Image (cartoon, rainbow, N blue to C red; front, side, top):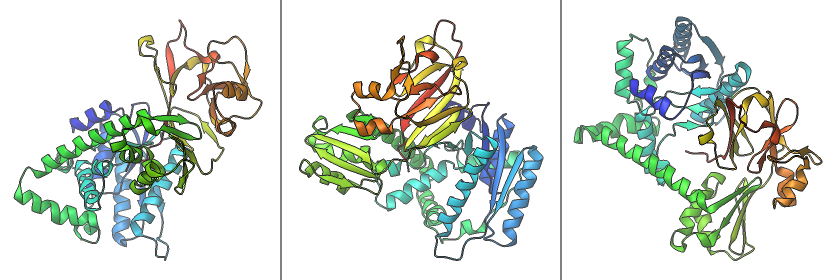
Length: 432
């Protein structure tokens, strides 16, 4: 299991200062994850959802997880729910309930990360399921190692490694017998398809796992390269279509616009459409103006996000990552979406909210204060965009940073800065 510890560190999934909530069902994988993270020194809590779908077995699962939490001397969180009598899909209902519960616990108890026990075999099964449905490279990359504050420390750990760890540490777990039934597509791949492939080639899982990893890397590289064609604004994105080679224009557009609900056919329609055309999804609008494609949200909620600690925070399709670390001058970020502020000069709690008309701030390098809306207008922001700009405020209610625009002078790093607060804003890509 040393590979899992290296995986966590390599991808900075969790640090030792963060509180981690682990969803534990009582099965082998999640029991192993809780024990492993506790063993190597992470601050954990355990959450369990009793869906009451399997009679007494559900209660026995709950008791086992509570006993594990007591054994590890960590906080135990429990919720019991009964599925409503409706046509709602059981798996979708359970997943929605689970993550709503987890997110509520993060807010109430200060957990920065949620850890789930998905491992390399799960990612491989996801790849094959998506392949059977006619997916592209993003679906073939399987399960992402991180999505928002959800991390998957075992994603490069095999089921066989987990079995060996459980046996070595004599861990108790319960097996859900429904996993052996073929009621769901995943179980068909797990119990029927993969065993047939293994009979054909004993190394097939290792080879398919290598392919899965390569596809993850290729998908990440492709999506990063596609972003080079995008200028990001607070109300959406602008794309100069002539910069994209005509032979791959529709495909590149798809990889850029997929997170906003656009499908391949719509991206082909965009390429072939006349100037002035508009194509919509449930959440976004693509306006073609000459060679420019302007993507905007249909509606934009103004919010106040209160931030009391480091971590990941989401609002209006964007993710803000906050982390404190030592100041290394030669490592200063050079992107407008990523800045460092002197951590001593930034007072928590912070607020991430829409800028109000008439507010003022002192841009980096300036000796004077300016009206924020005037500053944005001079920077080329149109009236609609200016109304949607969000900024980070500190406890003194002063603007710390207007993402993608400017840092405030009062929090800049200087000759005596020892530690910094890293602020990094990204557009959500909603990986599958």
